[in-house]
Amino acid sequence: MPHTTGPGRIGGDGSVTAHAPAKVNVHLAVHPLREDGFHDLTTVFLAVSLLDSVTAWPDDGLSLTVTGEGADGAVPADSRNLVWQAAELLARHAGVRADAALHIDKSIPAAAGLAGGSADAAAALVALDTLWGTHCTRGDLAVLAAQLGSDVPFSLVGGMALGTGRGEQLTPVLTRRRTDWVLGIAGAGLSTPGVYRELDRLRGAGELPASSVAGTADDVLTALRGGDAGEVAALLANDLQAPALALRPELERGLQAMTGAGALGALVSGSGPTVAGLAEDAQAAAATAEALAGSGAFRAVRAVHGPVPGARLAG
Ligand code: ATP
Image (cartoon, protein in one colour):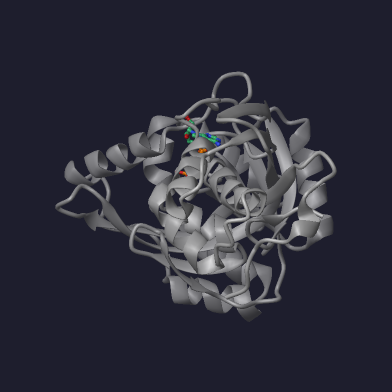
């Protein structure tokens, strides 16, 4: 495994910056509740071109600042932040002191079903591995990533992958096929555990079947590798969409607005409330984003594409 470090990436002020992408779950099947209270998943992750960055400087002790999305309070700037936890975990693993001033510049909205916190954690591992010269392999970092959260391993590898277990067991899927998406971002986030609780409640009350997703992850992967965008659009599926809609009924309007503005298909991304719309190509994605921007259906709209690489050093 190649090392992620490289002294050439340390800036004149001693800083190191890494970027990591948001993800969309193109397919997300949530299996029945396990006895330990967790769910097994089968999911197709796609890393998309909406990136957060984490910069680390040499310092005594740990400190953290946040700018951009969620900096007004949704994203904690202390030990509750996954970046802080990533720093402590890497320091413990490598036997070094957790000394760094950290800064997150967020473009990925918080609590949006886009794995923004996971992206930041993955970027922090990569940046600090270089700052501290801890020379971890990608394999070492993947083990640490899985301890930080189920989506962090994917944020580290990026691209496209089949996720099983709680989403942390990854099988990378090689593809050069680009897909274009429009993200409709809501004004307020949704809590991931809250959406899972609502799913369990709806299933327990018999209001939802054991799984409501159409097709299998294999069908989606086949379509994503070779088929046209229309074929992929017909297979978009997410078991968390129904509970997200139950908690946030106005999301239905967002899904309709997305297809009404030209997307071939739309789904709630992960636990929501972001709506992801699949476009025919980059030009169509830009047109859909422009049509939605003035519609009032979303707080913000972004045209993105995937797959893009996982966490890596800037420059
Ligand atoms: P996922 O889809 O991975 O479950 P999400 O994308 O819906 O998560 P995140 O943006 O990762 O949500 O944030 C979820 C919560 O995690 C936030 O409400 C916040 O309290 C906490 N959090 C901790 N660290 C971060 C971070 N670096 N960025 C955003 N939120 C963070």
